[in-house]
Length: 369
Image (cartoon, rainbow, N blue to C red; front, side):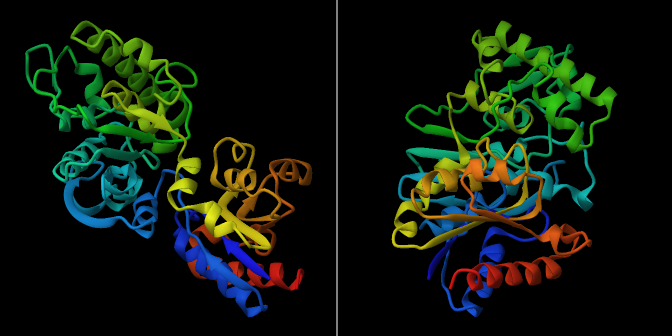
């Protein structure tokens, strides 16, 4: 039996490559021929996925989420570059893991983008998952030459906290992106503002209190109003666009720069040539940290099930909140969850996660060989 193992990461525990290796080890132990295809959906691990697709790594120094310099990598291809938000200024770059909902920014992403421009790419991909900030893309825009000024004409450093102090915007020094196909890779469809916007929907998981949420929402609305007045008349329309609220509003800033949005899961399945790897397989095993009601909306396992054709698909998760009817409707013949095998918190125990994934891989193979 030939099995394609095509997982996403288990966030906070194992990378996609580590998940694939564990499942493959279990499948192989039971006699299956397992082929690993670690994937990404536009969040953490996107650069690694690009490197596996033949891109080369290029080291850069950028500002982490709270401004501290950090060394990271971008991916450079023949005519395409990839700058991952999670690697430059995402949650994983917060010092000591301490959340900073008002003081973090997307500056590092913009600095990485400027580094990528030195390679003269025809296309630049910006995977937007894993954001730590809700700055409306103020950091990204600052790195590309936009100047945000307070009422006294003083230059503002980007952050969620600074949004409410923006009184004017000077776009005269913005980097020319003409001729570059800027692509925002993300599956989030939220607008920038409102009850489904970036502040209301996502800033709580970045540490924002109710008062912080109100401050960020007002700051984002003010940002749109100032941009409209100071040379960007389409800012309100872009703020309403599906995906503008992704990554704390970085999606909005990317749209302002002329980016086109693409779905993360679908894009990476194409980038890594999923159809070629799946051809000739008897089974596909996919995985992610959690399967729930949101899994059908652009998440990687659901995208794999949709593209598997007649090949049966088994899903593995740290925790499964779907009923049998729900996961069968999504295209999975069965689901295996680590939480069904232990009462321990596997997200905080990578070694236990590895062992259980190997056991699950072996169980999947033994039930079919």
